[in-house]
Length: 420
Ligand code: AMP
Ligand code: GLY
Image (cartoon, rainbow, N blue to C red):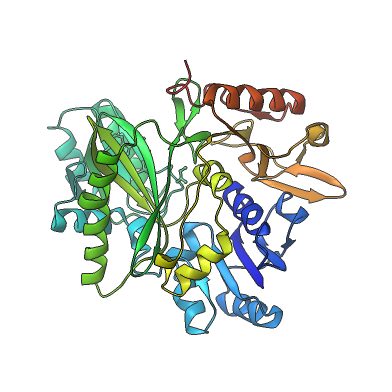
């Protein structure tokens, strides 16, 4: 079979790496992929905004299955488009993707089905928002309604900070803003909970803990994720049951009432307060870097799982997992998540031996003129699987020291809550 993966990050390299293990697969295409995927797949630089051209390429090459990594094409309706052309595709449709595409869409489902989440208000202009903020208690959370790669969220400690957030969002920092959301601040510990869906049923696809802030000690700006470990230290049977009953099942019911269903990965971003789950946000895809920690533990053929989801027969598949612990540290370009330089060579990668359980997934890299160059904010993902999170982190830091790359930085404290 021929499979195509949309995306260019660490998540997509991890997907590619897992799919490579399947006997079912003869060839993988990555749209556009990175230096890491170019070793095991064919990278194709195609304009994904032009759905028609993309469809023609898939038909010409006789690609049997498309996996969509990132949220943008999902929210833009690529699944609906490809399905109409009779192309098999794994991911949620345009309506269901609103769970990530519009925070207000999700909040409305939460309200209707009593899903535990932060109390919130929707504000249509600066004046209304500032009037409310003048009377409220802090800290408070202000969010842009659009897709913002994890960056459109402000945790504000006082009125001055909140005024800046309102100003920036309505001035279009995250795209045209017709609304913003002001939310109660939830004081707890975060967890990412993953499920995989075939439109009729779903299965749990692991848990992880991301580290969103750029600097050690959870300081600095919000990023796409600086590192993760799996499983989350918070998960237990009681909590798992509450997440399913109070959050995921009512959400699927909400989608059903809208006349649709969910196929694909669903990432439930939670705040856990005293073993009670509160929904912070949904993402309609795997997390990045959470995916890089979860997929290496999967023992079942990933291609079989995707095919089962596309055919509505996920119940036939038994998901098998290694019970090892897995940790990922992301190496980023200096300056990320703000401005950083591009096309900086990474020289020493060949000095490090990567072999299971020591894995490397590329993100913002490109292979050109026989050199690996950093072209993105998040550049490399070092993953290690072990019985012990502390040992995994030690092994990763040893590898990153061998890399000795002056163009990048990373957090040495990933997993500090599970490592003494
Ligand atoms: P989001 O893009 O909605 O995931 O938000 C980004 C990050 O902001 C989350 O991962 C949390 O760390 C934080 N956050 C978002 N909403 C809240 C909230 N209501 N209370 C506390 N922290 C929040
Ligand atoms: N790691 C956060 C995300 O994928 O959105």
